[in-house]
Length: 455
Ligand code: ADP
Image (tube, rainbow, N blue to C red; front, side, top):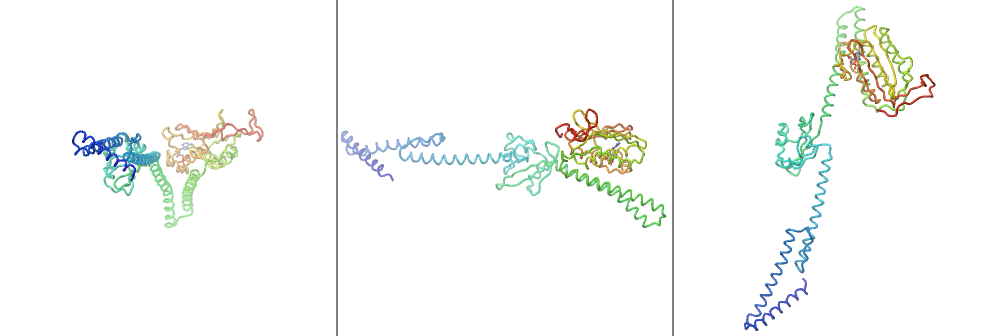
């Protein structure tokens, strides 16, 4: 209580009534003079209060961003406290808005789609990824029922069904592929819809399933043959020559399984190990000597095989992988070239420093339409011929994988009935020409590096 101000007001009232009395006496109505003075004073007072309150209300209603009107007395106090409360509320609101904007930015930054729905399934908000997956416009489609925008029956049934325990898998409405949709409730009756493009995962799963079924099939065939032979040997009393023939066939089948398992292990190693180092150098000549010995024993003199006398090349990488890559190509040339055919192995360095190791044969060749699929696992142009010659259907997949891990590529050229040429391109950073100076072989110390980068 402000006593000074109260005293002042009482004083004004007394002065007003005395003044009213004086005026009343002058006018000859002394009896009501005091009353008149008092009521005039009270009216003026009320008008002044009214005007001040109107200014305050006007500020609150229209212009509360501006400073509060400066008013004396009680109205000034009210204006001060109202403005203070207003500013506090504004700051809290701004902070809440900033928090909300940050949350939405975080949702926007996720690689998955996020969509918020109200209790009647209207789109409250969705990020760009969700909009892209579902073909929505985040601005135009706001507050539209999502079932009007995404009409896939599976999605609509799932949303309306209300059982969101399991995610839903649907074909992407906009793109090829699959979309996983997970719905969760929040704030009692609102929904958050999370979308994830699972096309790659689905594709990988399908490939894995196909791979397992291929492997099972490849293993089951020789196993069936083997168990058939075992039963025959148990049931029949065979003479020695018949027994030897069957044992030979059993050996063939078990070798087939061995090759398959060993190729599968090579593939698994290729997929699971880091890229071959760029500073471990392998002499190509030494590698070719070992491959030549293997391949000549397989050909057993049935082909004319020509290896280069000296390539002067060293290659950076994993020796076993380079061996697999080149060895498989030469072995294929032997297997798919009829007896008496020619096989030629060559190595050359391009002017840009890349090496090309090629295997040319005069064999059966490959029709053009098969070439893009040759490196797929278990793809064979003629499955019976491949099996007859001990093929696993994994050779070229291994070659491609191994050479790609060295930054290179496999190039295939072929003409049906005339022969094929398989080449490995090795990037210049992994190639050194050794002991060649002006066309003349020199000592090992003059190793020459050609090219800088590993492509
Ligand atoms: P496979 O074990 O069946 O030989 P690969 O992956 O090595 O498996 O080869 C895939 C297919 O490519 C073979 O089945 C064969 O049809 C074809 N092929 C590979 N190399 C040659 C070649 N030098 N000449 C003709 N066809 C070939």
